[in-house]
Length: 480
Image 1: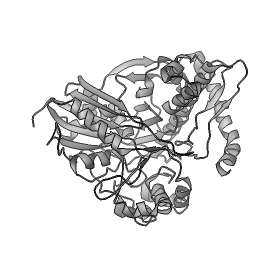
Image 2: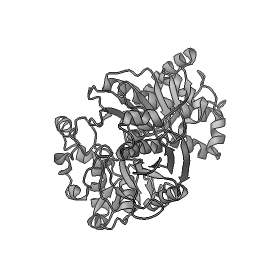
Image 3: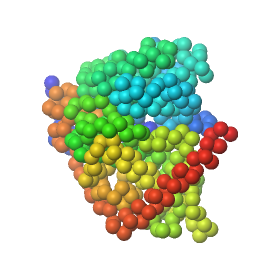
Image 4: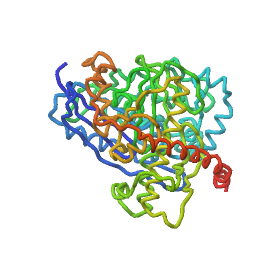
């Protein structure tokens, strides 16, 4: 096999990012282009799959001329494409942020006992609004004609793979909540939804060769299907060994811990063992989306809003970043955003600061759940993603977590992780740990400030109290 480069493509929540990496870890090219998310109603979030394919192809065109060994894919998870037999989407994709299937998910979840979840899934994973089965139940009831035409329910990367290569497959890691510890579909769970099994793609090794490019500048080049963004970012941040932890900052904050221990902590997703890695993951619903919201509220670009932020003080307002419910570890679709402690003296900067701190506290809640789930306390956390660029926010996170944060180079760990998987999948690198060490480099370490850490601890306690006190109020909104 000839070539000296790898391509990684990440189909994220807000953009397609891609990297061209040499086998020596040198970045030879990069690509990033955004696409919109439509919100046609409260709690709704949709995307046009054509945007993903158009920009993935644009990334490949930009790298034309490179000697590429393999292409790796990754994408957002719990975003679903409903496509016909020819891979044509029948409606806009329903993204992971969308809450329309909350009632359907609760109905399915009520059919499954805690013991069955442990037996079928290996962990107490909820069937929530973002679960594939919940989405299928919703579509069958709300849009039955489209459900009847649906041949494939696919993740973004799997749909793009099908369009690029013609291959139809899924991977067991991105299919979390549908597969068991044996990396096979949980037949008992899937059977609860008529027609679900027939619309799910066969499972394949994320490190296998999914197909070859059918056309374009890299026709004939193998494509490694890869897996979900959390796993890809884990590898793209160089996390592959027990005791290591990651903090992926993007539209949402996703935290992960590698540990062989399994304590079954509620609210944490513990994946089946894969490639000698046991990943405990906590995907929150808060992150860059919260910053984007407050920027729009203030009528400012995100960077301008971020520039208004200042270090937290005892008088700073608190913010619950639950603008679209919350995922891990709370899994509360009725949660709502809230400011508390506002006075007439607070201005725009105080609001932005509160949003940044609220997101950091959401991450702390997730990390504490991960430490219980994996029975390990990481000495530091590796940080990356599009939301990791602000030094002030990074320092605020280090103070909130009470741990050093090691920010890694680049803001596209998902794409780097996809390239890591491509390198192993095509045989250019022996295993994931060695590939990650070769391709991933650190940038800067942020240490918690003792005084600010003490303030953060006190405010975190009040932040948790605020969430609990708001629950009955939020429940009233949800049923109104």
